[in-house]
Length: 350
Image (tube, rainbow, N blue to C red; front, side):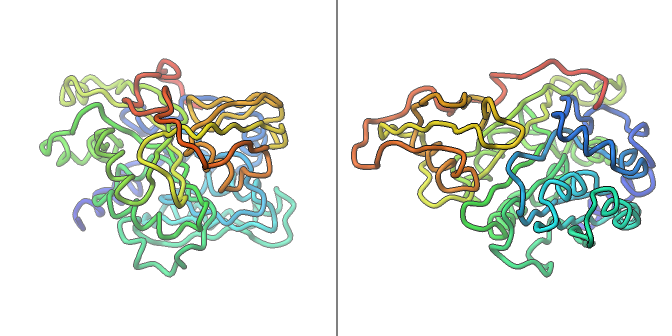
């Protein structure tokens, strides 16, 4: 384990000096950020932006006042976005094990507080290994939201990372993160390749193993937000990979008591009020739950809880009880998350 950690620190601390040094486009955010994120990115220091190695958008909506933890925060880009969105009454903690990345993040705290108009810092960066979250000075049940951007694939004990993250969340809290996944288990021989591991490919979990890890950790019903295929764009590395297909996937995992292993029908419905800032016309919980403002939508019991037992509750009206069970709720998940890929991959990053 220590050898793998040292290889990762070497790769992200010395081998890579900016995003152009990447040998594939795996650590590359393909989708365009929403307008409110773009506006914040325009205020983030160039040194922070150029050392960004994420593969997705890990900032959900409705963040004001939240306490947020970023696993593998790197140069701090996503932490600073979250810092602006949680506001002066919220707080963001970034964890990373690479000294060079932490130095960039810490160097620009005052700069960003001035850019955001905050009187004092609401963000901090801690040196630590996400494989050892339980050994850091973090209080269990103290975070509303945990984010991570293309980092968990670099962890050695991914099951432990998810279990520790579950413990750190408050009841009703959420883990919202992007990472690289494979359509099959990556051979051990490829996992030993430091470049493939550093490029976020050979450490990628087979998607079904990830679902089982999540459920074992306590996240009973993982939800896919977005899925994008990854093209390697490197002939030498593509030859090593062979027929393995990789995807960048954004998941949201909720810490909610009483979620069921399958989506069950209790005859419940919800209606979106249109009150989430930036999503006034409609809101997407995941890739198969779209809520137009004012329209009554029938939902399964798990979806009902994901809206009623979380920070999203104030944005919805809720109808129905738990008195009558009508059987399985058809068409609500349960298959490969890659069946509904949201867009084609591109070599261009946002």
